[in-house]
Length: 518
Image (tube, rainbow, N blue to C red; front, side):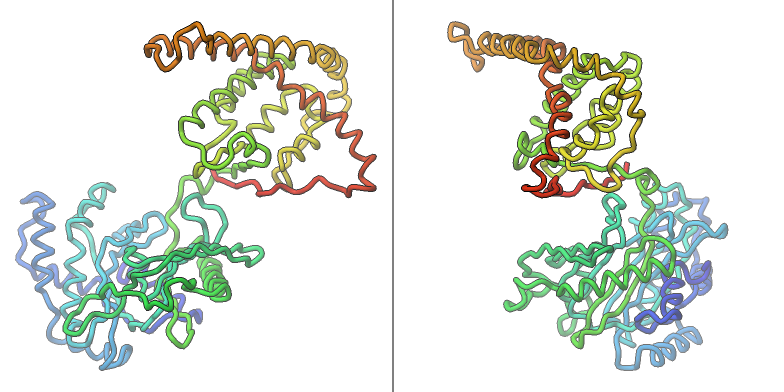
């Protein structure tokens, strides 16, 4: 590993295991050491490290292999690539002397920090190797290592030379959602070679494959750009136009997306952790695996899953909700339900112990407002009567499967709270009527025709009114909320009667809860 690096060691392991990896060979980091050692550079300690690295990069780019090394490289090219073929020549920073770090490691992907050169012919191989060596000390890599607290001048580079596959549709695939670590296979695919996907130079379709069912969901864009072979007389890949007939159709069929997802899952199984792979389809439909690396460790990966749902909240927040709407809604839920729990007999000390959950009862994601289900279950679980109605409440919230919570109290303990709950229920209608009269009074005051219109009042007056209304709401808004708690027992006992005519129910949620790691 210390001589060829994680990138090429993984490719060799996959090739040996029968994966469709194009042929390649490696120039170990020891050759880099010899090339660097032959340069006339000052000691690292004698100049600023950035200046030393810049000098090293410039000198290495001119240190084109010669002699026996050059002969060996060209012979290997003829054998593995073919004298008339083309190769992808890639650098890989290898682990340090302690075995840690290195490009494409499990702890640090270091992606894109060393250079790759595509469509390299035999006569350009030696120069490409020198340029790969030089990329060890390019400015971006030096800044990255410095930021990570790694000695920027200590880098060592191996070079891999891989047969260039003439792919016409290329992809990057993840065995986990890179945004949150959830178990979904996500594929980004474009016409042309993978450079278009990796560097976002091409227009990209996305495919979401459910690993349990194989179902494919596709997000297709109009595709105008792709990356393909260099133009005549040039060496770098070029951005070209996607043919008219291909612009609207998905880059991959559902069957091909499933094939890619299956390949990614096999790579994950082989290495025992989530993977990010790159590959391509050639015109004959063959699938080729070009690179594989572990997904960068995410601080969220090791946390428990958090489930979100919007089963009956969309009636209050249809469509897209802005940040201002969400901020007001969040405060409303915190104040209103604090008042509810207090009124329903949750002891103050228990409410204080759960105070951190109240501001996060709802969340904002992609313009939608969602319930955070674990916090709702914990908070409602403090209500003395809740375990008698938990099943009906979970049905109403669209909570199914593993997200449903276990009972906190025995039926006997929960039933002991029924007399006090009945007393509260008996006074609920009158209390709600008083609340509505109070609220009508507040609105009449705010919108009093005799008062100055809100739009004409000065900011300090509006702020004072805003705070006064919210202070009053925080002490009263819990009054009408228990109607669900009082009504669920009646619904539960009344539901069996119409079931012979209406079916078993309840209907499943329109959208399943969204799992999110912490």
